[in-house]
Amino acid sequence: MHWTDRIGRRLNPHDLHIFMAVVEQGNMARAADSLAISRPVVSRTIAGLEHALGVRLLDRSPQGVEPTLYGRALLKRSVAVFDELKQSVRDIESLGDPNSGEVRIGCTEPMAAGFVAAVIDRLSRQYPQLVFQLELCTTPAQQFHVLRERKCDLVVARMWTQSSEPDLDAEVMFDDQVFVVAGQRNKWLGRRKIALAELADEHWLLAPVDSDPGSPVFAIFHACGLEVPRARVVSYSLNVRTSLLATGRFLAIVPASVLRFGATPSVLKILPCGLPPSVQPVAVTTLKNRMLSPTAKLFIECAREVAGVTKLTPRQAVKPRPKGQREGGGDRRARPRP
Image (cartoon, rainbow, N blue to C red; front, side, top):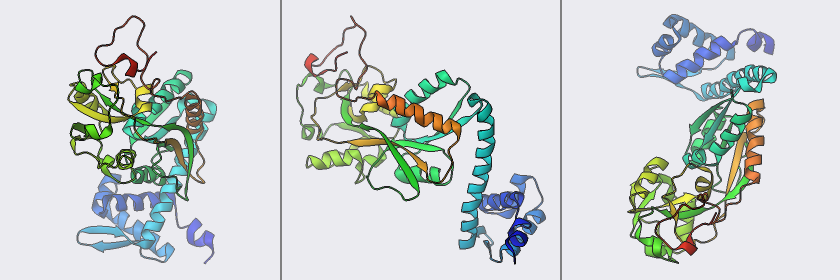
């Protein structure tokens, strides 16, 4: 059968939309309710798709439905079809006025609190009506997923490995590093030099991925011949870390970009631990062969500008204090200067 007869005339976006809803809901009745249509319409649509394509798309059972191998293939391309349609509408809107567009950004919480926030701040001053949607994704698997499912236009995150995914493009913005930080009242602030091994039994605040091989924190402790210390608090939340660090009882390892760009309270102090060299590239990753919207391109251009002035040395990682403001505790020579 000719393609236009088999597909072009018998396969339409409305049917694909119903198919995607059925897979998402896992049940035809629930899909019908979510779409505000009758269940027979859903059943006829799925049967029509299977007849047009000549394959079974769904496995039926009393518990619901699951996509077959053919169904997963159609689902993947259907997501791409609707994403491209959405992109075309956004492109048309932004061609007349970039302020009318939006950009969907996937990122880790440290990037959201630091570098990404700095890019948004700069870009929103030029385009005040531009909308930014952030999707927090903490692991590489989650970051790849939001790109491949087209939930985000781009991802901003540290690269754990130098190997690249064949369907993704990554552009390195800058090399980040990490520091051990403590609150103002922490007992270690008076030391001029601290070996990482001395801190092994302290109260550590770590992210769930920090103990995984390949993570920056794991690599640092491994390079020192140490095991990653037992965390007393495990959380991705920077707010939790900042609040507990302020008590003076906890330690954490924080990216320099967070200290440089984020609105981190001045209570956080870098400890002179002398960590082994650890270059952690921060990259903007996009899906190959996917046309970026004008607003996504604007974001990447602005990210390059912000990254161009990023120099994350220990002295620059913490924002300078206003002149005349005193800083309590610790060794003055170990502190970043304005």
